[in-house]
Image 1 (spheres, rainbow, N blue to C red):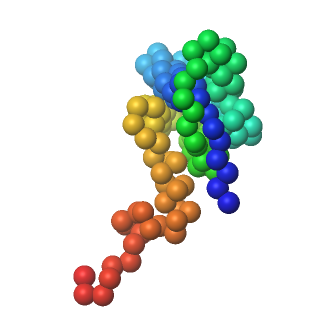
Image 2: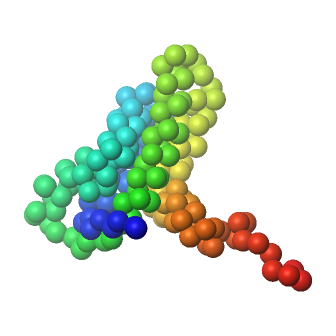
Length: 151
């Protein structure tokens, strides 16, 4: 069963853009606090689902009341999967940097995650697409399809 959530489009945009901006602020200034805020929001979204994600709730209870936007349907499972993956991939380098502040590999992974958060904010969420593909048995992923006889 694929549970769907109706989320105001602008609330979802606000969440995506805010997290990408926070990631950029963190990596460009080498400050962990904004990245930790992203990690915290992503982890809470995993626990609470996209319906009660902090930035979604903030927008919906404030700006959306004054300036409503159309709703969009989001897969709760896909969002939970992508947010869990981001939580892990942001959390591991945060942990490494808290234990060894000069860890270069940790900053490299945070740069990669910053680019991925930006791609997710302005185009499409690769982790969400991966979740959908895996649920379909790999039918949408060309590298998972079996070649037909004679190919």
